[in-house]
Length: 130
Image: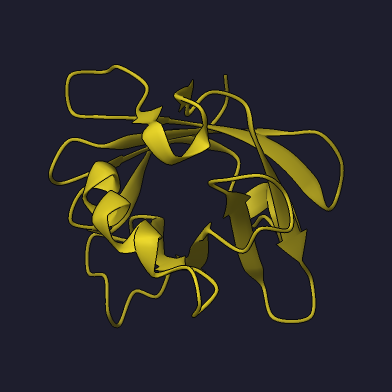
């Protein structure tokens, strides 16, 4: 059984074709690449057209959250992931990441960019060891 940040490491895919590639840096940090259904990284127009490759991420031990910075670190536009491996809810015993986008309340202009990241369907682990 894996603990901490190690639960999040690997290649994940959502039912609508988006994917995450998460690589560990330390016990509390990682880098994440986010791909659209065609397999291409997403162009972030709100962030000088940077693509979603090698984005910084942190693991918060106290609540088990994994937070990916979708903008500059500290700006508050994030993809938060929660890990689930509960057979009672998941009869196929798959490892699942439950996504949510968060932002600072005052940054309303970011609303139009949520669609870049799909419908936020759960991600299922595809590749464990790379």
